[in-house]
Image 1 (cartoon, rainbow, N blue to C red):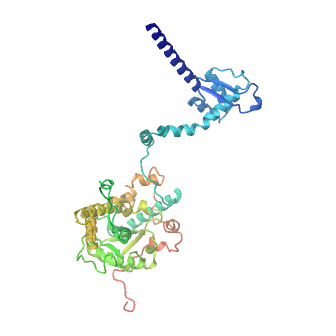
Image 2: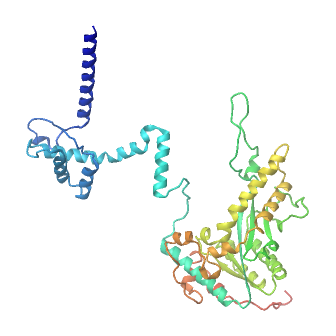
Image 3: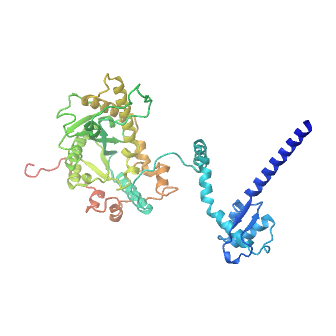
Length: 456
């Protein structure tokens, strides 16, 4: 019995070995119909290949020969030691096998990176892919696409204009930037720990708010400058329609030089900007006397009204406009201020909400939170660095490398001296606006005390 058992085990091992051999042989088999059935005499040709048609070297020969299937078939036959003369249909079979393998490469790669349907394998493959090729996780931002040459022309004209302003100044220059941004009554909370929803045990964790509260937004006119001594004295304006915060805020005095202006709409218009420039001129004459003031503005329609230039001249503030379409890259408020300010506002809002019994923040308390955020961000940062990295200070010697990469430059090109020409300046302003651009470049400042016309 022992002898019979040993013989059965030996036969079992041989059968398993034969099964493995047949499995390997069948996996290396190529059984294809010829590309031209009329040339076949003995039916389909089945050939067993040691080097398969989808091997890298075979596909490389197929690609490098201009996708010549005949040459790739000869290479495949030589790799497997096959005679191309027998049978006569073998060249067509091998050529068809190579083409079929080439067409299946995309599917093979897709299956490879998918990790065979395993989520963990997919994450590991994608992580290696990002590390090898310099990618990162993120979202592609939707924005208007501008030709590279147009971007370069706009940036060069703006920098030449700034260099002319610095060279044309007869007193120490104070560079400022003002821009409007939208702030919400209910800021978006940071990512944190949220209770898990358990059936029949705990309700879903939400931040309760009415539809009006979720839609309530204000316009914040923020001003920064390159002088840390003057920055705490600059006005910061919050525009409200008077319904959410009331006609008159209950807070007596807000910190951070925050002023609330109630008007018919919370949107900024040219009348609002004229009022702001008048207030800014009076503040600057007290905070930084004896200096020349240059205010950077973007090309919003309300900023290009003809009355804005007249009001700026009366307030002794020179206007320089940022190129249209490039404010996200060349405006200091966009590059360095707003993201930091709104993050701080959201942080302080969540902190105050956690200390509240019912989690409700009243409008007057929200104003205090906003003023606290302005106090903690605006005076604490040296905004001169933001002006230097966009090329508005120091003659573009400290322009950040990311900005040069965006414009397709490895190094900054030479900027000509003197004021920009009319054609160069027109590239800065929107095309739809009919503006006498040289009145802004060749700025003529009126006398310190403008003459009154008929007592007005």
